[in-house]
Image (cartoon, rainbow, N blue to C red; front, side, top):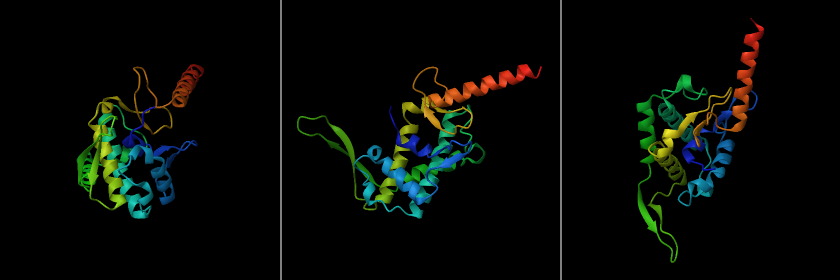
Amino acid sequence: MERWPALELASTIRHDGDGGVADDLATTQGMARWIHQQADLLGTHVDVAGVSMDERLRSEIVELRRAVRALFAQAVSPAPPSRADAHRLMPVEQALAHLNAAAAREAIVPQLDWPAGGTPRTGVLSDERDASIRLIAALARAAIDFLSGPQREQLRACNAPRCVRYFVKSHGRQEWCKPSCGNRARAARHYQRHNATTER
């Protein structure tokens, strides 16, 4: 299954399994765990081992996530956004400015790598030495790529009871982010229909 850094960032707000919402970035330890889990997606450009896992970085990533989730809400409109933060979304203009400013924190130039007998691939060159700035800029660029790419058209907010995730629709009739959400939604509909008939 394809993974996108922007979607992974937005998904750090998730259902906690008990009817509430969990935030994987609520602590610096949680942030560090999440960053290490994304190392493969961030590629060789961001040295995760060199990132200072401190409160300043956590705050910056949380603010970037706010911008990304606001832009995800804009992307799924007129459908409703995720219930996790629908009532307190960052204004779209502010989210755009924040995302673009975060991406601009690192000046990069494209680089072509073509190993002998191999396939050409692109990368980036940067003089930025601060791994935290490289991380923030890479996450912001990933969000820009996601929101300007074809997957934006397939972005949805899961409407299953208690779910707060966004997902990329992978087939025509997909309504939920995962099968367990579909099961919960069908059970809730059955419960509502059953109660409506018994109340008559």
